[in-house]
Every structure is written in C-alpha cells, then in structure tokens.
Length: 156
Ligand SMILES: Cc1cc2nc3c(=O)[nH]c(=O)nc-3n(C[C@H](O)[C@H](O)[C@H](O)COP(=O)(O)O)c2cc1C
Image (cartoon, rainbow, N blue to C red; front, side, top):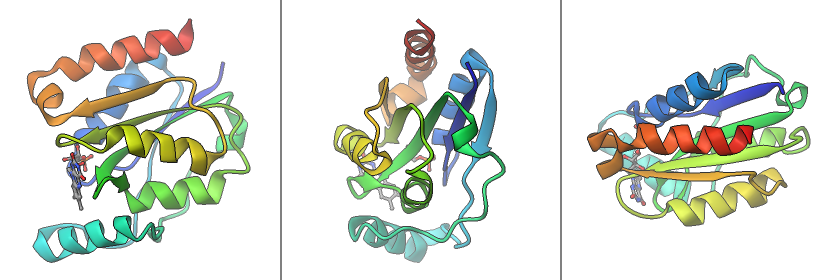
C-alpha cells in the first residue's frame, strides 16, 4: 500500500506527530508550507481570524501527488476550533484526488473532534482512522503510543 503523510505545523507539534506516524507506516512525508509569516502576536491573531472565517491560506506547490497514493494521512493544528488555513487550502486543492484518507489534529485542549469531522467533509472522504492529540499528551510523550496505535489500526 502506497502511503503519504501530509501535515502543516506552525510550532512543530503537528510535525512531530506526523513524523511518528510516518516512522510507523513508512511511505512519503509532505510538509505543507504557506507563504505568510505566522510568528508573533499579530500573525497569531490573524491566523485565528483567518481560520474562523474558513479562508484557505496561500500555500506553496506540493511535491507529491496525493492521487498516486492508496492512503493519504493528513494532520493539522486546531486554529480557533477550525482547520488551520494551510491545511484547508491543501484539502480544497486536492479533494478530487484522494482515494482514502485518515486524519489527525493537534490542539491545546479542545476543538479537535470538530476539526476532524470538517476534514472528512472537505476531503470528500470518511477518515479510515482519526487521531486527536492535545498539549498534555504531547508534553508527556503519550502521543507516541497513540500515534503508534493509529498507525497499527491503519495497517490492520
Ligand atoms: C491561531 C491559533 C488558534 C488556536 N486555536 C486553538 C483552539 O481553538 N483550541 C485549542 O485547543 N488549541 C488552539 N490552538 C493551539 C494549537 O492548536 C496547538 O498548540 C497545536 O498543537 C499547535 O500545533 P503546531 O505546533 O503544529 O503548530 C491555536 C493555535 C493557534 C496558532
């Protein structure tokens, strides 16, 4: 099975979960890069507003065609209880190309379940598996076990 893991990460948390999933499953790894600066308070506030308005960010062209994979796993941070805008852009641009997807979302504390449902809707696919990681699970390292179980279920 050809597997692609795709993620966007502003501060590295979603990236680390994506790497754990990628190590467990193999395949290819794609980082979504947007063209806007996201650091600092003004950009934080802008990002939250952009996400709440459900606006897609401008993203750089991706290296891997998701249509060439049997399974595409997509991860986003939660922004204002919404999909991060770079991942929204990726889903909107590629929704015609997904064969099967699984989704994960990282958050400080809440909003991941809603975001995972919206990722399913936007991608036009039902996620084969869904994974939520909050800040506590990230800090304690418990996310590694959860990511490993998520990967195992996808291979079963
Ligand atoms: C603009 C913005 C809005 C956020 N909104 C939420 C939120 O609604 N709920 C939540 O639990 N965390 C929220 N967070 C926290 C991030 O979802 C969380 O820290 C995430 O794991 C960061 O992932 P990253 O390091 O890959 O960027 C927000 C972060 C940003 C930057």
